[in-house]
Image 1 (cartoon, rainbow, N blue to C red):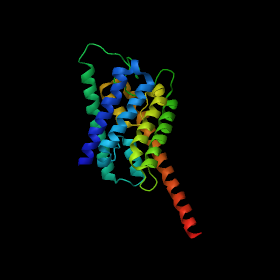
Image 2: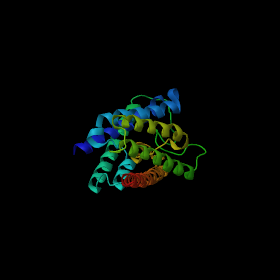
Image 3: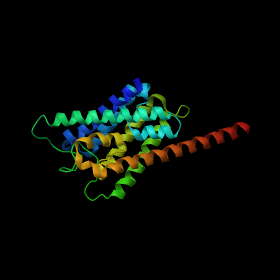
Image 4: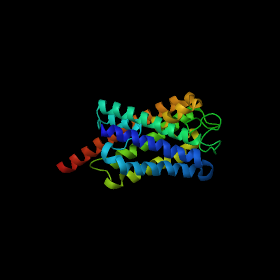
Length: 236
């Protein structure tokens, strides 16, 4: 149960702090600053709850871990439910906060369509472009997670730093397309409070899940090739 609680709290703060950076400070810090905030929040969470739940805080990451056999089906369902609940609470806090005053600057969103930095296609972007971006960026992000957290080939205490940097990078590149999701829970929370985001929501689910699936398959292939090479070296 403590794993699921950690995932709920972690996802709540990811949505509250990272999306909050776009909503409350976006015009002042810009895309680069917003991306950095997403990465820094995840770095903090990795070192806070990583030893409890692995700090997935993302259904796509949990899906990739499930495909790779690192968590079972029961855990996968528990993780996703916890993440969605946490995202809803985090977005609710953000909605409550920004409505305490009469107005605020919008940043990292399409004003008038989706508030709370919800994931919607930006002007000029097409569904195909957004879907392709979500698949590729999630593929990269989840592959980094597999690599740096691997028990044999990973980077130990530096894993959280690499994971946070990866999330920051994909946000810097992806925000101009669709505000960058790579995380269905991150999209789900703000969409609950921003009805205008629902038409594009499917992209933020399908894209990350496909990207995570590709990452899991590729990482398993890499490990298999590495094992075969080491086996041949031992025999030689």
